[in-house]
Length: 468
Ligand SMILES: Cc1ncc(COP(=O)(O)O)c(C=O)c1O
Ligand SMILES: N[C@@H](CCOP(=O)(O)O)C(=O)O
Image (cartoon, rainbow, N blue to C red; front, side, top):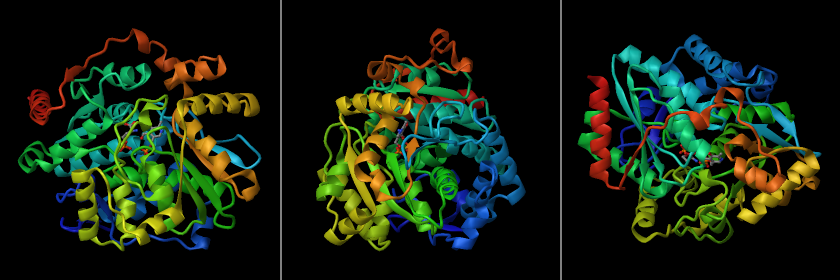
């Protein structure tokens, strides 16, 4: 399996190269050169497999020869064996045809664990074989950070620095990162928002000498391996509800567009996904784009679903590349114009294609509280604020009379956002026992300005101390 950059300038890579590179050298994102596709009979044969086995089979399609099937199966078994539910990603029925696909039973209680528990093992496997070390730099609006830290803590060949936006995550999210005191983990609270953190990470990758010197690697969904490891749960849920013999719809709480991209990928791979809903909070750039081709940046406003407080959705570039006929030069030009002017010029034909695939929706804070309350009253289901955007979007854009199952990605455990859930329902969801003392644990993090040289010096200093 080979991967090309969305901007067409970087040399193609195999899976191992993509895993370690993260971002392509031309600033683009890696995508498969050709998509693996399964026939209906091949999909049917996967129905009923335990999740780790299904994940191993589907991820193998993207890994190719880079990892032997027996090794990948072992890694999937280990990655998902520690989840708090025997089904790994169970579904709860919350309406006559609506299902919550619970992706939050991993160690840090959000969907990021599903990919990152596997990614940590893939990194280890590949690095051990090559006898190399890497420095991971990641940006988080709250959930990727703790999942990446949990997956990489105490690993001998990995040093990890996570940037989070100062005072813009929930307290549970911050503490899940900052109370991990392992020597190879560093947390930095950046004076800025998530986009500032993400831009700093991309700038570190664009600094070629720094990138090479530090052997930078990525854990954000700019890394294709993250997407590959998120694809299986969409297949798992669709197969369980009758695909490929019955179409399904997905509604996905969206920020950086990685999760909904994985849902789009199963459609690309041959499953009948009739509707893909992109659910956002008040930071509604994707909704504006899908409704009126207005892809213009606006300042990010804090919301009750902080993990989706994002202005620039990195993975949008992967779908845009496809809609532009996989034209790297055109994709690069659109992305550059977006950076320079704050508005992305998307040709009408490409916009029409994307609008035909995705439906946009955004939910205010008041709407979020109302939806959490409604779900609790009507379905006895306690949802976190991100999941609530997905369920509210599903109710509007894939109503029960559509006649097909609607799968909502339940992306976080309600206990990660206890204040919002309590405001909406009067109930304060408790943390699982293993996190019961989270508020008593010692925290360690630095507060730094959003300055590339300062952040690079911090990353370098930490990696050098840790390697010594
Ligand atoms: C709980 C939660 N829901 C939704 C999202 C949005 O997902 P994505 O960034 O893949 O669009 C995030 C952040 O990624 C998240 O942490
Ligand atoms: N919501 C995310 C933002 C980063 O997204 P990623 O999927 O690109 O890692 C978070 O919780 O950090």
